[in-house]
Amino acid sequence: MGSFSMWHWLIVLVIVLLLFGRGKIPELMGDVAKGIKSFKKGMTDEDAPDASNTTAAGKTVDHKADETK
Image (cartoon, rainbow, N blue to C red; front, side, top):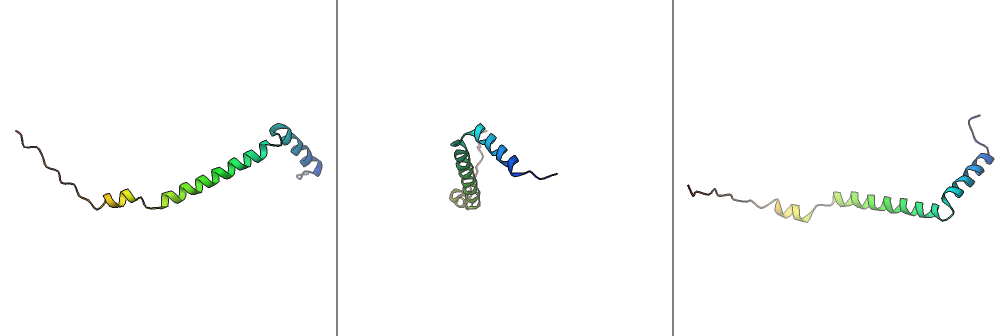
């Protein structure tokens, strides 16, 4: 009662192809793959140390107050 027959899946496939077209499904999958790749690249970029932060951390800044009173 809970499973679908082969005819049900065939009808669903035809409806999906009619809605999206034959060329649209590969484009969608390509977009999903690009999104995953950019997400992975963003995650690895976060893990890499930033060169500007490591050089600025060792420097100290001396602050002198104005004594013009």
